[in-house]
Length: 521
Image (cartoon, rainbow, N blue to C red; front, side):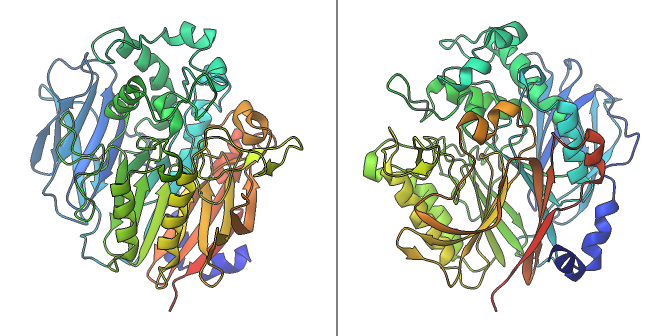
């Protein structure tokens, strides 16, 4: 089937697969990392340098000059924001400071105009790219190799769905091998929770803890590819755990400050979108560039595809039957966009996956690991909130009613590659128009963090839904490429088996499974 589908793809799509991610020998100069995002008229870039800059760096975009805004205390981390750009253009960029060049020029394209109808868009999806080399994760060099292979297929944009940092501090189980371990103290020191993050020892600890999990993984390889970074539980420096002693979410004030500081330093927030309310939670904050959103984003590629990205951790509540994962105003926005007709394709990308469960506390579903090592709903899941499942069903219902589209949800978190069709959710029968759900695949998961190792069970379809699994969840590293065309979505799944394959095998990875989602006619 995979061969048949590949043969049906337009030749132009396959021809791009051999394009290298970037020209060899690009001179990064003093630039340590570059992560850009774009819309049709804006560019936002996060960058760091090998040493502090005494004067603000300047980004040139064509004939325009943009002075950098410092993000840290020392002057190593900067951001650059430009608006009013021409849509759908390849722009030449350069960086300088005090009149001296900081790196070789490069190119970055804005997305097509909101009213344009492009013929193709390719998006790269993955999850769980974080982890410190000293703590049993896939080495940063190997993670970079996986991502460079993904970039070789020339995606138009990248969605990195959560868990960019693993440094849990208080979660009873996860912290012992991460941020609360003796090794963590040796590497980075210890956070002072009563102190501010920037301007003191906490900033030093943060740079030592988070920097090695991000900087060598990305470097400057993504300088010409827009990125969309979504945060999940570990990005708040905790695992989602609930006991009589501690419930790790909603995030505490200090957790929020660490998550916000990491985003401010390393990767871009979400740019404004005319169809996304500027008043959503954690949008238009006074200490950010006007209009940016920290937790809820839009990837819009003309009228071809609109992707809604949402963090389920920051606004979750513990209110029993009325509890939510995403703020009610965010839910209103998501449901309105599903009903809006202008985009050919509309995709949900939540930080917590519908469709599968590993029995953990902070999920949509009530399933918990039973004595027979299987998921069950006959035993209560302590501190789980029934309102979360109600919100899940409302969101799935909004997607199921998109009869002119192929409903698609792509998520991460569960450290697996998977694909299925959701045929039922509670009392909602979707057999006639099922929702396709996919797990994009993790990049950096270490041996002890696979669900089957950490939780005693792999990702499994919960009792609340009926799933037709095309790819049963596979605990391997990998990524997903999605090609959006006017009449269909083509999905290509990649995986790499660390136990059976060498790092060199990454350089020639090809999809192990492909499928197409035709647009209803």
